[in-house]
Length: 597
Image (cartoon, rainbow, N blue to C red; front, side, top):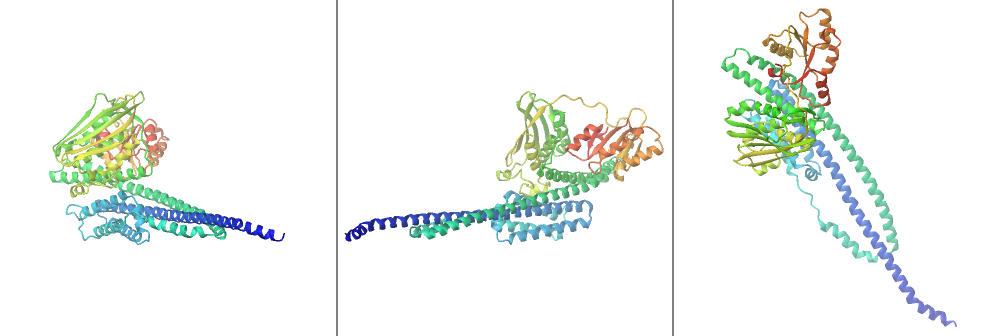
């Protein structure tokens, strides 16, 4: 009887051993799975952390590169101001901005993650800045007017900044991942995973839990850093846009004075040499004002602050005015400029004629630059039409030099110009086509270009307009006086009052000037004018002061019935739309006599 248990134990021993082996194998498999899961989570969290870190570094680098770009633009504005005024303070300011941009590029290049940062930055952004620097440097070193020579500090700073940008861009390379590095740990884990035991599985489970906690904490930390970098970048953009607007305003005021007074000078008795010099002054001032307006427009578009008017206009009249502006320039180059509007096109539309004229003018300006002789055709066709909207296609075709496919790829990028000496000689900021693209997209269309070297270029864009109501043209000029009367000119600038007064004197119109609306009202209360004031011409300086001046003038009984005309800078904001409803007329600077009479 006592041997039976022993025989039973012997019989059960293999079964128990098999159970223990199976249990060990089970724990080993669990441990192996936990080990594999822990490794995968570790690998994934490390990769995610690395990507997040690189994202933060790339965001910071993009913000820094944006700062560098604005410094370069500020230096360009200072250079243009130095060319226009000759003030050495502008040259020193431009050199300082370029030196700061070069130093910041060197710092970026010296960071440990420079190759990854450079790879994360958009190539067109770097290429646009490089082309912009090369164009400005070539302009400075040119032997013509405005050139300063290669040994000038500004030119050297342009060269140093361009070299630093090239060195930074040379570090651009795609990130490389070696698949063997990820497979080797898996193979190692697979070799010893079958021999893992339960305690190891528990340790791995604890490690898994700690890894999850660490992953979530690191992710929250990097998300917070990204949010801070985003907020800092937005604040930087806001401050730079404010700076650009202020600088543009400060440059616009003297430029408008130069344009106005040179126009007055052209109407005096000048010999041929004097007239040539005066026309050159006026042409250069108009060119500088156009550059300032382009920079301000592009800054507003980047910030999403561009607003469009919605008013009735005649398409034929708008296009003819844009084409007529370039007719004299085309005639001097022996270029035939032609406008054709299909008879199927509805010409009475509702939209923003000023923005449409801006697009057509930019494209015609480019076509004339690269067409030494031949023809330029502007064609308008109807694509679709319903009871509410009309979709039109505009085509500008020239017989000029044409361009290669490589040049066409980045043609609509900001600050991009064709990379050849002829393009640099023709000038420009490289913003015209970029502005056209943004405006066309806001008008519900698209733009494309087709070109062949030596055979010319065709630019097509589409736009949508609402159906409009026909508006009859004004038969009475803005400043026409019925019977006796005089005009009151309000402008804070003495130069502005003189220029406007000279225009009025040429038409035998009596006028009085005042710096502010308050002084004008005080003058009227103290002594009545010799003739009733029929029209008040207000020059809006600074922007936004027109409505305040209007409210002050309406307090005077002598001006209650006077027509008010506002002379303002080009503006498409909500304030400009309100001005058009409150004033008898709104005229955009620069002023031409044809706008008044």
